[in-house]
View: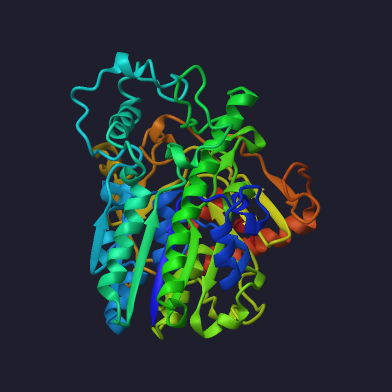
Length: 510
């Protein structure tokens, strides 16, 4: 078996024409014609690294901790394949978060890896000589406030990096695919490998090569406006359309380079012996619900409902089919394990999707999704229940981990001063863990940038009649059923006792 795991970041399902989107994506369509397309695939923990921990471990992360490293007791598909069946695992990525403190231990589970530099605020090029006053003439202060030295460091780093990205071949995504093709050259004629080809695009900032620019994708008054704040929309309608066009341009670039990979499959007849999984970590709000981005607001369908396509040589005859069974990011590990005939660890709560390739089948009663400490989405494919916890601050909130790292640095001494040792959870393999009281001033998402959760009221939507989630309503019977199912999910994840109190679910335990 050979497997390519193609992972994009922030790929909105409705940006793909094969999912009914308005952006022409002929190569995603090509893949859809070859693969089985999953129509009800959902996120779990958000955002970037929590989603990857879900992928790697086959479990939801957000009940126990926020953004953080892969823990010593965690299962990981790359390590599992390598240690169980000697599968050679290789990672190609331009995702900068793997190489921050909060992304430790993921890339090192692979035999080899390639780190492509320059995305977003990757600390790639020195900023010592950056002329803020000169940059202010190019970058719109609403997205690039260089006057705020403390908060604008990452925007400044990106602006400096961007000065070294002049031609299409300088962009990280083309370099990712080129590195992926180099691996395929080295692996030609060799069996038993998995390559994860992971592209940060179409994540913001929406910097796109000229070839993929669209008519609406123009700067205003010569100013760059392509990195919306994770906040309410304040831009004009014309500016919103320009930003959306920039995102569409990045999707078009992803589509174009996916086409080069599919050309390789065609030319070398890789369809006979190589599987391909294509998905993302989460979606992205592009002004829907009057919001940009993710994390702060509810996990609307634009964020939580994501694309997944699986091609498997042994199930090629079902290419072009779609499945409506409810699936989740936690199903990635068991699906990979099943492909390579590896036993699925007992701690895994996800399910292999291989049995769904030839037809519909049982998967999850509900999926749950959320950011640690925030609201929880409970979805059964028909109803989306956005459920507000009792508290949105750090009241009765604890993180359980052995590697106390936030996104961009370690936990503060104030956070660590009162930590204690907690009994093992059922997934920690008998290992006790640190119990660390969450603080309102901790650097976890979203308050790492001084923000918090907003627009977090409890709401129920009927996705059959209201797929855009525009008409919230309440139905006690539906809500009770979904909450009972969510409690079952929490139980099989050995959620901490205080999480039931936080979500006011103690009465549902019996």
